[in-house]
Length: 328
Image 1 (tube, rainbow, N blue to C red):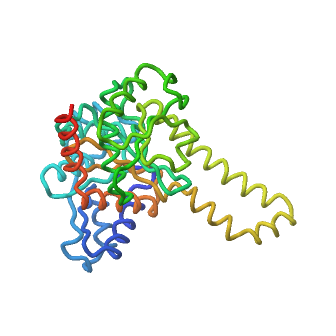
Image 2: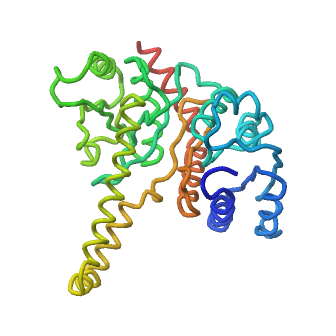
């Protein structure tokens, strides 16, 4: 029900995944009129693979998280997360209010043993594929122990999504030397060095894209600023390319000649291809789709949820967290 496009993005994305993946099924949660439109769009060709759950309320995009938690107990967001808690769904995907989603998910699902704070993790495109970065805005005022927990959770997500072993973990810092950074970062580096994670040291902002790390760890303030800056630069580059190749007839001809390369650039910078941030550290899977997600972007978020569910990400995080605690 939420996000800029609401069911216009969610329903087509769900139907597209149902067509492509015989092992997936969906529980669409929304207001009655919206669900009726979804029923007609889906028809009867999916049988029990497409189910519906009526809600009577919707959490607004500008609604305070505390208000949503207290007053919207029958909202589509709350019921979707409750479905995960009850085992009626393996994951929840929402384009709704981020603060409300985090607050509700934490209240309903609780955090995993050994996790103090859930974090937001998402994929960032780079030279060698994707790098996973966290925290992207859930936590401000972290401790070194929190950053270690983020590294553990990021390792599980990266290894599952990238199908790799021993994901390389780096700490985002203002320099590569041991003396650089504040006390928080240096203390976290010490903890990571003593862990059995594949810690590769500090990384600067430009290093996020060079493929030298699979997981980049930082606090939520730094991570959110970095992410929004990346998104802005990607859009800026795409706009400049478009403007320059439309400047005059000669440039337009050159643009046609370079069409294949330009299309590839747009594809690599297209944020829809890596949409979907996971709220890791919870006793369940919750994926936050961008509020402006269209059908393609929302489908990307759904597929991420399917991958995390099939990989059993919460269980893996709990196991690795217990292993680290035993080691400590």
